Figure 1 (tube, rainbow, N blue to C red):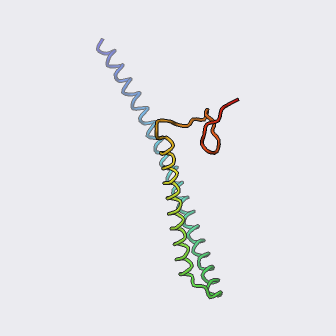
Figure 2 (figure 1 turned 90 degrees about the vertical axis):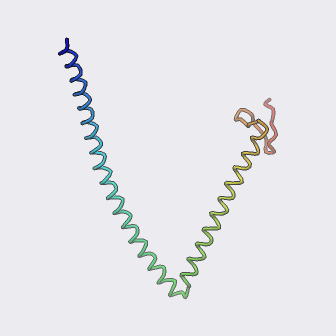
Length: 125
């Protein structure tokens, strides 16, 4: 009887080893594919950066021909971006405050309870 139990254990170990080997090969293939995708993405990023540098050089040359101060324009654009980000952050905070206010008092609005524009409940006819 000892040989039967040993054979079962060996079969189990063999099955586990085969599954592990299969999984390792799958992971190896995934890694090769991932490396390929990373290389491709890196090449795309490099091309985009070169194109962007060329476009920037062209824009700076055009701005210089028009007697425009490129640095001042870029600084102004950065200030506008920061202002827009601040405004959107304030809007998000305001929305979350309104959501908190509407759920206070233990009442929550549901889709089955239609309401008019003033927030008052309407009766279904």
